[in-house]
Length: 480
Image 1: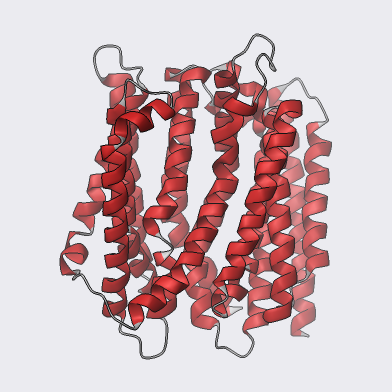
Image 2: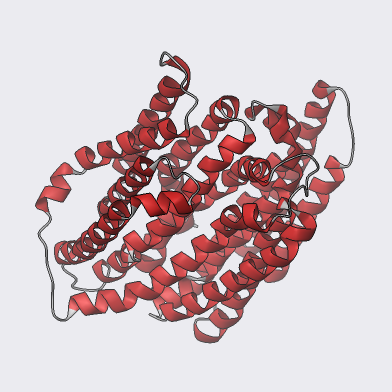
């Protein structure tokens, strides 16, 4: 249990550096939904969906490659750092130049033909994100979680502060999505200052043996990440085009995308926990892989991970009657019924990340590529079939089908190449019982908000007590 407690502690610290910034970013939902109507908010949703996808190309899977090769016995960490950062900077510079030179046609493609400046700003945002990815990975390897958290949190404080200034405090009509992009770019310049010492110590390096090895290891990871982020963002990119006109009576497709993007923000609450866990778990898995009991350890980690995610699932899903006020305009509330499905989708994605440890530790990263491309195919087909008949609700089910398929495939293959004794039956039971409670509670209509909130708190309290009693009993049984 000591290692799991240590992992939990590191998850809290990395989570502080990941969850707090994203939570502060989540708080901007109210500011943005107050400043922009759904049609305008859809532009932000679409632009940052494309950024998330393209960012994967900029980083080229080098974060994972850095962990893999810096953790090998006798590895020269500084050499690995220089090699991986050299690849990232070279690729990012090339892609940034292409985007800047083609800013006008790209702006036309994104339906913002009059704003090629936004395309240039987005290219610079992606460049800075990529350049600091390896320095952030080094902090994780060196277990400098506090410094990691400080960098992430201070960046988002700048970003939130600039959003408040541009959209609320600056004189004149400031209702322009460009201010959101510019705030992100200015905040990202802090990263360059924060890592100035580390970046100045970098020396371009190509090693005849190690550089090709890192590239061979990284490009399947990049393809996996690209397919994975496509799974997450595809619906936000295609919903406008695949949704039939007037599907939602009297409302545009841009309106529907804005509603969907706002609802997705609540699902990000699950992703916050997953991201914090991943930052701590990736070096944890690599550093404990050689231990004799590592399969049992990894199984226990996944078990407790699912419990935490189930608590988040029920906590958010049955309190949407309060959380909806984070959306400033009531027009956005109509999409909140899809939030539990999206939360479950992210939960399965987190389980997939746990299951995926086998192909990272056995250097079979190409399996991750195959699985995630399979998920991308499910995403495309499911969105194509479901959006015309179910709108953005169909997109939420497409995400669930995608991550369910990926999780099952990763588990089946993993048991063949790197068996880990996951307690699948218990995990499924936790998830199913949680969902039954969520939909059962949400089916009960209580008009008095105070009574409803008290009832929801009571349900969560009983739920937590049940988990405590069940897990405590199992723990005592194992010790005996």
